[in-house]
Length: 178
Image 1: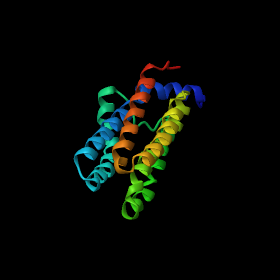
Image 2: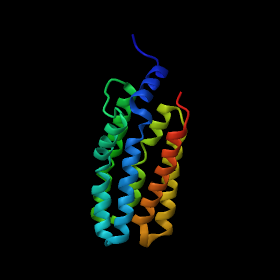
Image 3: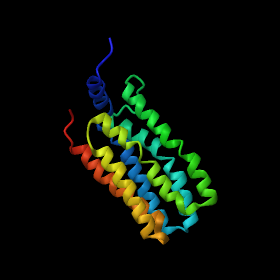
């Protein structure tokens, strides 16, 4: 007998324990990117951005163990949906890599926005606007700072991402779980 969507959502909520591990990991990594952009030449900071963003998932898995979050569940179709969203976001590397080679000034923009798109689906799963707020707010603010601070794009984009994670983590922690 199949479960209802509400039952799957409740199960998702129980097994993921508010799903805070990956955003915590993302915030840590993007904070490191911010620091790298201050201390290192732009090209080095760009490489830190590229390779650092690839460490978010493994760091998130370690944090998830400590927080008792089941990030790798394949029992719940909503968890599978989130996994597919992560795949979708990672397919954008097929855009990011040519940008690194031919238009590196666009990489903070593409990676900063691209890695936040899955939040929309996460918000739908948990029935909370925080996913839309995060994805749309992050995207709009990234575009703004990318234009406003052309000499500090990596720093400003990473600062926006960190601030959005802080705001979203607060929402995740304080929201009423249905």
